[in-house]
Length: 125
Image (cartoon, rainbow, N blue to C red; front, side, top):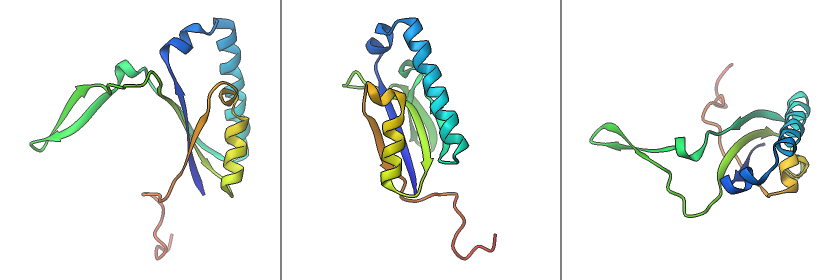
């Protein structure tokens, strides 16, 4: 089963962390990434750009239409995504709780219900 883990952050929180502490936390996260990548349970890890670089895209009259945004009412926003493939929800929770950032903030965990790129059951691949 696949699970999406999301880390939320906010600019005030990041700005309040001393550089040497942030460097240590980033190194710990790198070790976490390496450990679960080696186990085969971490399929992907992505850090997202600053929210000022984000945009909202729509289809307007058959063409892409983009605006600045998202305009968030909350201070926190998704800043990192992780994709797991594990045997159970319990294992996904164990891995999420082991994430260094989980000591400071919750890690949001969502089951992936379908894979748009998975082979169909009748494929002979």
